[in-house]
View 1 (spheres, one colour):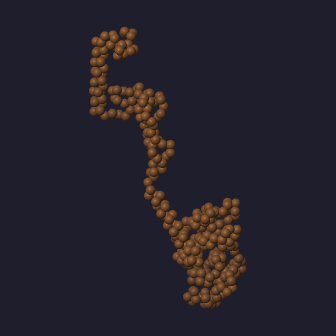
View 2 (cartoon, one colour; view 1 turned 180 degrees about the vertical axis):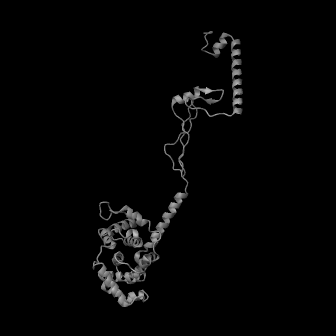
Length: 340
């Protein structure tokens, strides 16, 4: 029942043109009374009207205080005149005649006291604070904490500079600010219509456009594929040939896992082992500690035949060298020293 009663009180508060602090004080009186008394469903609206009447008498101008007949008319004559007076007396008795309470509006006025008047920021802050009235998570929050967090959030939405952190107004609670920002997507229709007027700088429309733009940016960020950085390659080396591309120094963000390109060790010993220890029979490098993958039997027969052919060619070359004179051998092989 609370959201419906708040909509009714906000409409009545707007119709009577009461001060913003009167609305927050009336809802504070309503919550304090309901925390101490059991309220029947049929009397809930009556308690809200009594709280609004007490807050207006205590805080607002005398010519704007609603009368009992006006409240009765707004309730569609569900209650008699005497019932309003009795409920007003019962609320005051329950609260021990303790009416005054530091509202968020008073702390807001203190926070912007030393700054240039910005009506759009003030209206956006009041709009956020009235949205917070509909959520029970903020009922127990101190008024000063709510006011400072809502003020910082409104400046962020309107792209206004934040004051120095040494100021009292800038020392807001980040948890409260995040909690307020999470409740801005579905405000009450009554509150949104109230702050869509030119009197309140149409801040509800401004907030709606801001949330739409933020949602579109978030959707665009989810749909845009990540940009991969080009993999750097080593320059050409005459002795070693082209080096294997290495992993770049900066890892790119991948939606599902990480990029894991193969890494070739860059040590000289590994390169010499690759070039020196090479099995011609199998055609794979025999590096210590790196066992080669198994080869199918058909490929083994083919590679064995290829090894026999290479061995036959080597024996044929040796026979031809024996038929050459010594000078020819020395020309072909400078290390030859006549059989030494």
